[in-house]
Length: 280
Image (cartoon, rainbow, N blue to C red):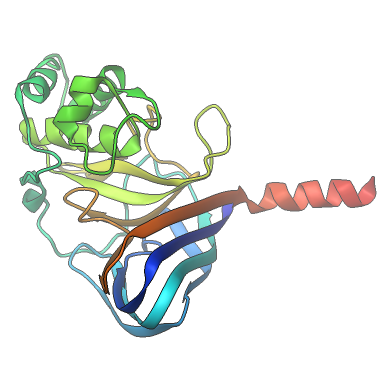
């Protein structure tokens, strides 16, 4: 599948900001499941700094914006060719030992509810089966409902509420997987459409669980599936904050407002629709 991604994040300030330093994890991962055909990053008034590939295999680059600025936009346009690898992350080069992802963070710290959910999966053939069943258990325990949680909501809080978004499903799945001694990490990226075919116009997140003799496998508990050709992978971390596509510091006083617009489109479908309209 060939996907076209457009992603714009706009920061607005009620007082001009003197200086902004950003770290961007916004470049598609390099592995067998996807190939970047074209990718462009632009930052309003930004000066691109050095880039590097970290131990997790993610490409990170620095940007500096010199003010005064009242509005800064980070814009992404690109094309990626993807294929279904049944969720397995093949050909991805990284140096971090998977056991490092058994560590908890504040977002994934387990409470009684998460411990009970992790223990509820008792009948499994092997660790791969266990990972699938843990993902299914999280899907059942947390209903997908936008607007009921916030960026700082923890896995324990989302489970107690019984509702949340992809970030909450991912944090909860990571928590229960780690409780069962399966390394797990947070993955940020994009999704072309949900399983029912409806357009998905937002950045997306899912978990990767490490299974011995196979490697890292993606699990999207929010959509009850493993990542396939509809997904574009950007990067990973211990939780949403650690894997954030944009991290930065702004020098100045005042409130910040954030607007995000993401669109992921099937290029072949767009071309087919365009040809049909031309012929008609």
